[in-house]
Length: 236
Image 1 (cartoon, rainbow, N blue to C red):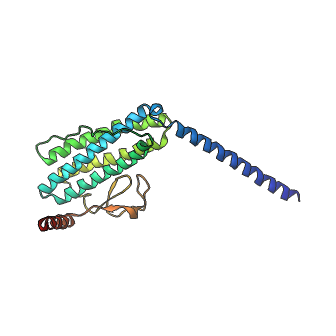
Image 2: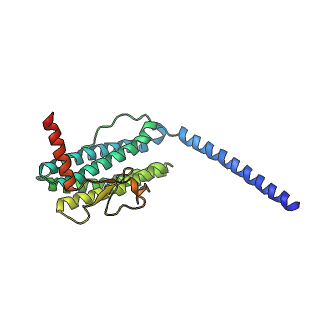
């Protein structure tokens, strides 16, 4: 009998502790949400705006590179560059989840024009710009967000940093004509990371299931797509 009483008492204590903890968590969450304003975020809000401006410009630049690659009959490179443009779109979507809650104003793309005598020279210059932003600005953004208690924003920047560093390396590989590692590619639809070969069980950057990765068209597939589009345009 005494054992049963002790068991019931222990269960009751656990239930009370759980209820108290849940209420404390709800109060903490409500307090944190009430502080999620432009005024309170201060420089963290400015960082969100700057990150969006960068991603907008990077997406536009990758699309321009892809167009130049198509013009030069470099269809595989064009497909990869298009995939990176889609990756920047993934970053913009993630940024918008925070910006919408802040009713943030529109942002103009940053000035990231990559000057070069050729597509390869422009890719080399842009790779340096992207790597610098990821290693410096993105790192600073994450540190400020973490310092102000916004771990979710800091983790987003960490993911962006990994992907942007990867993109910088891919730009250099394309510019240098590297063949290894640029075939049989697939892209994570959530964070934009690009992997070669067999898709992982889970994305190493954001843990998205590997079966949801999007394949990057190979050169011959891209040729078929472009030919189909031209035929459609000719029929109009």
